[in-house]
Image 1 (cartoon, rainbow, N blue to C red):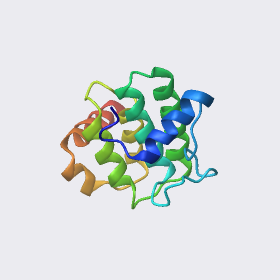
Image 2: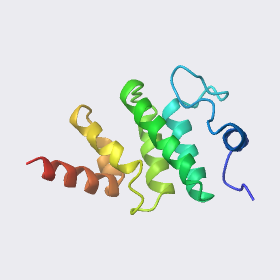
Image 3: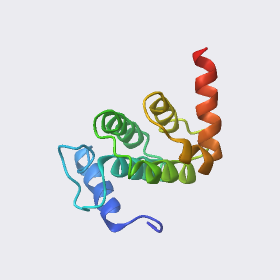
Length: 131
């Protein structure tokens, strides 16, 4: 039933089902998994919400992701974040994708653009709209 998700992600899902929140989604609330940053945790929870059609969970994860993106930028984990989003969400699911593109205004992401063509298309589209 939960194939493809780590046990700690399922633990967070269960916690959410009882408490309408999940641990590890902000920089002030560390994850039980040391390698997971708030950005990664929120992406994983968004994907779980999408998989199981939990729109409220998706909205919560999107909100927490937005806050974490603004306050806990981590250049080392950002490629993982982009990879996870673009490999696990449909191009029509703009929830997290639309939050990534504005990062281009303040960050250099040339390597990511070369690696993930969909991200490059979104970035170019966003820049074109600025003119």
